Each structure stands twice: as structure tokens, then as C-alpha cells.
Image 1 (cartoon, rainbow, N blue to C red):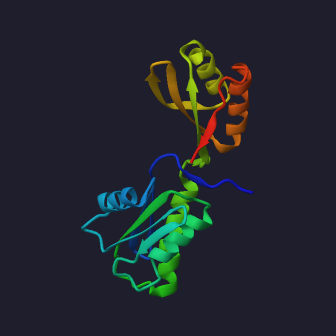
Image 2 (image 1 turned 180 degrees about the horizontal axis):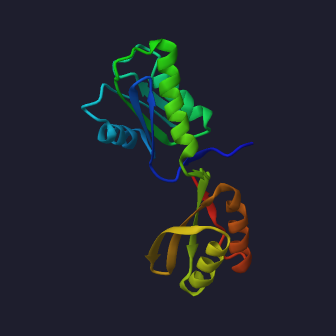
Length: 197
């Protein structure tokens, strides 16, 4: 199974197609509100069209911004899916150059610009994460924290209480069992981490 990826950073790709200029811009986004805010921030009011799409897990939206229905937003969304991307928003801005493209050529121009932008952009794998919760006495805190980090986890939250600390650990899902087993082992069963959610 191939890993799903998002972008490591925003990216741009520009091309001219039959005298129209197409600027594809893509960015990693965590949620719909962030996607829509980014789309609004990069659209160019002086352009003829700012067409866009985003996909975040099962949620997606697209917009043709005045181009004929199905010729811009959907091809951009298909480019996102075709490139194996998630948590990504793409805006393709068009400055009309005087030559009408027709529906098929428009779809190829928008989808192709988006796909090329995503193909060239630096990417990172999306790793599914999970959390563990545990109570740790002060005397074992340094040891437990070190073992968690050695195994690829990070202490997301540490709340000190009268007899120690309440820890929430964030780690890739496939490492949670190993982290829980190691913590239980090094504390001889005094700490038994439990999954959160």
C-alpha cells in the first residue's frame, strides 16, 4: 500500500497554454477553514478566474469560478487525487489570453497545471498518530520520558500533580504498543499506559 502524502511547503508552477497564463499554487492544509482562508489569500482579483479544490481526508470541495461547469475545479481535485495527495489545497489562476480553449482543453489545462505543480512540490508522508495516557511518579519521570523519546514518541502534554505527572504521549500508531510495553517493562508494571480516544 502506498503512503498518502501532503506537501512539505507551499509550491507554485506556471505555464502558458494558448496565450492564457495559468498559475497553479498548492499548499498543505490541516482543515477546511484553513484551506478556504489560504485559497482566499492567494487568489488574484485581477485574474480572469481563480479555480480551486482541496481534499482533507474524506472532505473535499472544488470551485470553477465562472469557467464552464466541470472544466476547472473537478480536474484540479482529480489532480490532487491522482498525485496521491491529501490535506492539500490547490488554486489555479488563469489570465485569459484571447483564445478560447473549449471544455476538453480547459479541463486539461487546469488539471494538468495542478498535477504538474503537485508533481514538482516537495512532499512528506502523512503518518497516522495516536495517543497514550499515563500517570508517572516523579522518581520515574526522567527514565520514562527518555524511553518514550527513544521509541519515536513525544510528550504532548505534561501536567504535574501532587504525586507525579499525568503524561499524554503522541506517536505514530504503529509504535504505540511498543511504547506502552517498554514503559510497563521499565517500571515493572507500575505504569500501564492506556490508549486515548
